[in-house]
Image (cartoon, rainbow, N blue to C red):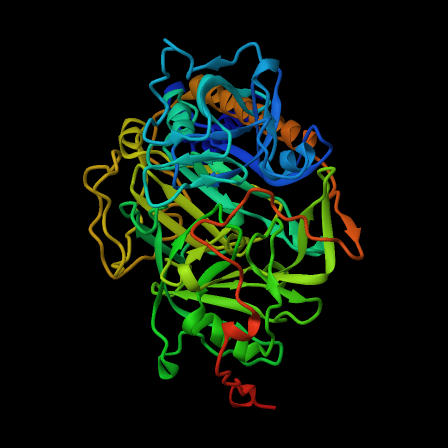
Length: 561
């Protein structure tokens, strides 16, 4: 009997030593914060898609977008006049903050107020905005007291090329000096100022819909199709790309239903590699120059937009119902990574906000999630928006000064992995192989980042990670015996279960169904008081957009048979 007991103990210890342990002591136990991206219910009975967070006591719910170009978190004031009605404006803003209903609120713009030093002061509130401080809730069991944020009336001046936070949703600032990432890291909740982002599936039908997530302090490995196939590059100094993430495409192929796949960037028809800026908050798959690329797209698809949307998919190209492009788009980067955006995420119904705050669907028209850059915008940097990240997964590591893109694996499964900065990895005896950025024509190491680690790998032609390089945290051998190993395992399991229970409660609280009301003839609800950045005047008539049509003949690309 005693021999059996010894055997069981040895087997148990063998099992424990085979587990990937990510901590040698309590100071090395990190729990990335997994925020769901979904339709968030608001007090006006409306719903807005975004990452869930709550501000104040008691909690006031918000739907927020991740913004890589700002450091602070911003929510909007309840008297913001962005729409014809307050209910419509609340849906558009992703919620209103009412400071009079939160006794823990502190107005930091008041005379003689002591300013919270964690607020990034370079981002200036305009139009009567207020510097504020209150409790922020990310999960049911995770709050940050005295959290600094901006209470916005209309816009925020970032001190860069344009107002990054203007006439849009509440935002979670995830820039190089992000207040929320820094606060979580300082508290020991996360081990790096990094984040993973997948927008989810946002199509018109149930099979084309799935919740996404925003992981603070790590990424969701389950949402990545193949870890070894990736595009990794360095963050750049803010300039024409205020998000600091430049990517170069060598191909953008139209995947027609008949099997033909012409390349918009084909050098034999005057194309060239196209550099774009990654903008996780932008409401597009991509913005591209009219000349020659969108003009070529229109010629090849033989379908002309009738207008631009002024609804939720603001200023994307609008088509008469049933006439929009019916194929997919495949993007290939200069690192060889290909991302195929399916038509279900590329062409969407036109969604507008009704006066009562509900979302109305106009099925008589369709929105193509592409923004044509023309007129005063013709020289703008193309941007890759959140709908691109229905098909791709993004991880940004502000400590390592890098970003990585993979092909997404759409799934409801979750496998959250913690990422540690170099100092913590060394302290916790954690081995984290580094990704090696590619040598990109637009990739210049940032001269303004305050968190660039020493010993960063030099740029090279290779960008691929070894299997598990970012995805796994390989842990050095730890000498643990008998009872100590058992206690560590039990504590780890208990904490893991507590985190899982908390996440389940948060998701259950947000378990709602899309409240879209379908309107046969829904009039456009123009966004009152809103103008697109840098866009002036009216939209040109379609016949002036694409002069000299050159018809694309698909038969030269058709597959045999």
